[in-house]
Image (cartoon, rainbow, N blue to C red; front, top):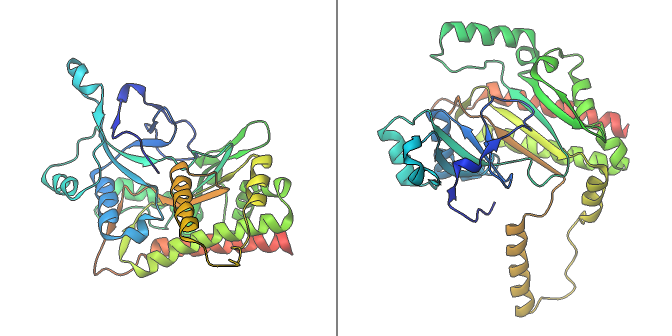
Length: 331
């Protein structure tokens, strides 16, 4: 994502009200391209370390733009009016080790819903164990109770929240509604979320989009199977276009396979093609879907501790739900 300015004016930030789940306090910039999320030191460190040491996994999470200091003193209005957006760097990482990140610190991320006309959003909380070692006993007991009463305990994931465009407005399903699902009927939650595909697309196009989304989920799982980490209470977020006309255009206008080149391109054609690709990357053409892992307040890279089976099992079971959905659609 291209950011034209390295500065943000906190006075222009507004509350982000379109989240399907998650904590309050998240802000967005005036363009809607960026989210400003108050964070723990653990989450800030995770994003920084991921960029520096695990660039392949960085492609599976929201683009990290840097960090922003919120809550500047009122008497420092002139200097605080425009806060510096600190770019991720080794210097930044060193600073994070030298002092504790203040509670006013926020991470600046791409808004995964930006660019969609009517974004349908599903937040899937991963893992049966939802807290790291060392968590206060009271909190651990509360989270164990949540897991035991939901599919977190039985399937290593649960629906944490979703919003679905019904043609006139968004139907919103909060975490309490989503907790009613069990291992037998959680498929109904997936069916509700993807219900728009049956009215917006032909059957083969709907199946293709579901298969593509499942492939993105599998990509995240495959990455975690190669890495050593612990990502307690992380989520995988699925977004797809809820506006039927926009979705049909997006699915119908993209070539299914690359066209064969009839002859070798000239140097001029290569140069023009490169310039066009750069322009497309900067303009970020509309997309039919996005799938990213999010929420890393309790995540860490853990060399020597093996892969994160707690999270991986959740992703595997989500893939099974996607398989069942595809089978019902095509069968």
